[in-house]
Image (cartoon, rainbow, N blue to C red; front, side, top):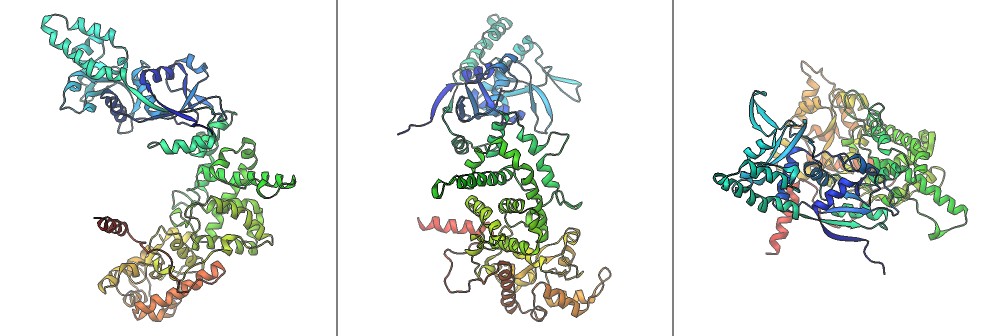
Amino acid sequence: MSGATFQTNPIDLSKLLNECHEGVIQLPDFQRSWVWDEDRIKSLIASVSRAFPVGALMSLDTGGPVNFKPRPVEGVPPEALKVNPQSLLLDGQQRMTSLYQVTVRGKVVETVTPKKKRVKRWFYLDIAKALDPDVDREDAVIGVPEDRIERRAFGRDVVLDLSSPEKEFAALMFPVSQVFDWDDWQDGFDEYWKGDANEDVRKRFRVFKRQVLENFKMYRVPVIALDSSTSKEAVCVVFEKVNTGGKALDAFELVTAMYAASGHELRKDWYGDGKQKGRRQRLKDALRTADTDAGILAGVGNTDFLQVISLFHTRDKRRGAEQAGKEGKELPAVSGNRKALLDLPLDAYKKYEMLAEQGFMKAGKFLHMLHIYRIFDLPYQSQIVPLAAILADCGDSWEHQANRAKLEQWYWNGVFGELYGSAVETRIARDFMEVPSWLNGGPEPSTVSETTFRADRLKTMRMRLSAAYKGVNALLMKEGARDFRSGQRFDHTVFFGENVDIHHIFPKDWCKKRGIAPDIFDSIINKTPLSYRTNRIIGGIAPSEYLAKLESGNSSTPPIEAVSLDDYLLSHLISPELIRGDQFEDFMEDRQRRLLTLIEQAMGKNAYNGDIVEEGEDVEGDEDVYEEIASLQAESFN
């Protein structure tokens, strides 16, 4: 039986910092540059000075299967750059770098103020404040400029001058850079405050040394040390479990470090180098208009991109195994999960990177054709991954009408089946294998064949975060919905130019005055895409009244003929007769049927209209609903 691949031991802070100084402990190259601000550094110094815990560290012994390119802690001497590290610090970079910079390095510290100004600081402990139990210890930590002189009134007035040891002694300010080696400083302090008259001052420093400085020397940090046999996936999983702050260690960061060991800068591919746009910016700018900050692909993440490449690479491996005569469980899985990403070789990345980027660009174009223009209106960010992979695999054939119709059917089944909300890795891989086969005459993919939409689901779609809710909105625009006021279809230009969004048909205020419950009038059945100006005309009055206003027109809006307005209403699947008569209940029943037909056409199948109730109680609504349920459950135990 195999044992644990890690140890948890407390290690002296001074030992850890010295090993950073010598290059024995370094950082993997996926760790970002040191960026802690002045206030966080002060808080860290204060915590150690009181022997308070500052969190565990996690390190990885070198020499195993995880081959990260190492990088020394910032500010170490040149000779440390030549050392092969014994361990890499996976979690705790910011804390250790901060403590190394302020206590061991012996040079001014570059940091950032709360106003985001880059500055240089020396840090001190105010001895009097540190010994005062009524003073917060963080207030006893002082940061001064590089010349060690603090000024005010635009530099005219000197508030604090610590520019020489004698001035430090006089001000009772102890330099944090000497918390591990204070003997020489204390000798100078005692000499400065010599004589019987100053015995109390010297005694105060000795108390400060016992109560504050010795905490630094005796401080121990818990370190989770992963041994060199730890796998790449285990490193990622363990990091996620212990990392409670800072940036999560995702697969992209690990792959970046592994590729760096082979001389490839993956981060530069994604983020650019200051001269050329990286892939992230190219995707963000794709299909962007002057009215928007970012296009529909702005939410694509670096791991999403690697997933598409992994799907192609693992499919290659599976096909190779099939050609070698393997079958069943002997065949490797097609996958874009974390383990597959961590095993993604550099040559596979280079082979498929351009194809993957082209796939995402095609996905953006496909989504625009479905009238999905903003990230905010995207039903599922996760569904873009298989969409991009499938389109990359199809080449130009996806634009043929028959293939595009199948792709749309697959997409809408994923949306209205609400299949891409969680635990999607298996479905992504399955769709990547099944959809291209379907386009070439194979069987329906499981996302199409196994999906069911319940007719009563329309009544419970109330939240903008719901994928199906967003899907109905996009379908209405795709099917030719026209604005009540202008009669324009919601193409890309009109959508952004007219600030189109989802709005109530029977206004919220009108419904509330008639005692209609929010869980009824807030459903997607009573909502439709409209321009901002049209919604202003609607206001909170009865539909019959705002339709009359539209027909009459005003100084800024010409009158609209009743027959034309009826056509606009019908394009939203709204019965003119029912809405003109303010018949809310009949309208809701009628429009539910019409929307259901629209969804059935998009999915290529009939919805479920049976009597079997779906498991669970519907609580889709605002957060107060969840809070109320939690409170009632708590009371039931009392």
